[in-house]
Length: 476
Image (cartoon, rainbow, N blue to C red; front, top):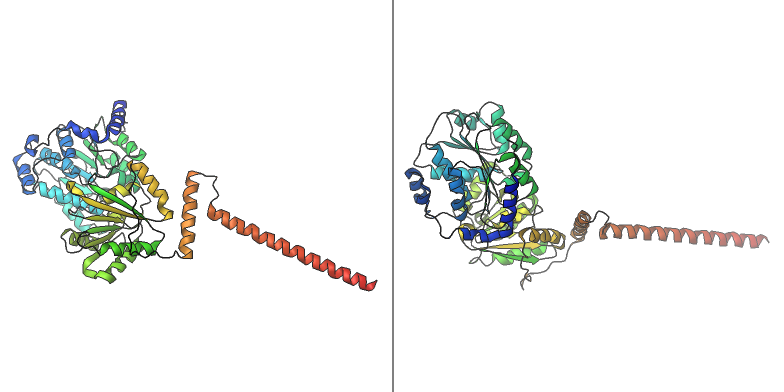
């Protein structure tokens, strides 16, 4: 396809960015799902799920998709965007047909792919449409067997899709719909090459849908390669956290003080009823899990990250979803795959280095327009990323003093050195000529050492000369 976004589309995107949240005023009144003329089977499933009126993204996306247009949707997580593309696809596919896939939905993570499949199955309850989710991390044998039985809607991660396509288990000749969900996350995870390979093996004549929570140069590039004369819609300002999420920032000196602050907050079990704690590494996530487990018991907490087996991760998310555990500790690998209502708090134990992940993390709370709280802990070494995040979301995150009763630990020498190195690295990113305080201290210490050595050497020469002089005088 390789058609770039039209100039008019680019201009429209610029206008959308300028108008921001005012675009919602285009919808004077929320539509009922009956207004979209969906068939009775789908409407019954929607009613069973408890939905009555469409969310803004659904209201704006469903009609263009039903009319066959390519679509570029910019929407935050938790706004109902999955149903925005699933419902019109189900409406157009109508019933099971043939063995080859007719709709392909690509997702960046296994967790998100599973969440999408849940919604596909939910809304297709009263149809005979067949859906399947495939992803890596488990053997392909069962997935191959299910594909051989015939599938109408395939939800997949890019890598596993390509694997099974290359083994001949997937045929794309009948493909009518191609969806890229969470396109920004796909770009962050380095899937752009896989996406381009997939675009080469699917039919040119198809309807394309792309959804992204944030906008970046790579997302714009893939949109240009992927979409043909798209309808562009946006439900809120780019990368803006939901207005119903209260954000709070605590500056703390070190890791141990973060633990003390976390322990202080968790004591309020009436407010902190169900929370997700995000960490930037697997090691930190495991440490936080152990810390909470020792204090509150194993029955109250689970941890998920890339080293956890697929079944373990699924069981942990389900336990959290069902309310069996209070705390879920996670790395960013899970930030797009957790679709749980009534999450009271998200705690960023670490500030994300990929700044867009901040929006995705805190989008786990305040879902479906409920209220939520997002709390971030930051050291001096993380202030750089806080500034970047605030620039991205175009707002300052309110800073609060560390509560009384939280013990401020002394920063260990090794951590102090690490923070200094991080600050220097960040400053070099902004100014390539910057040598850095850490570098300068090392340099100054080296110079001081050389000065001492020279002074010592000079003193040694003077003593030697003095002794020689004494010897000469004696001879004399």
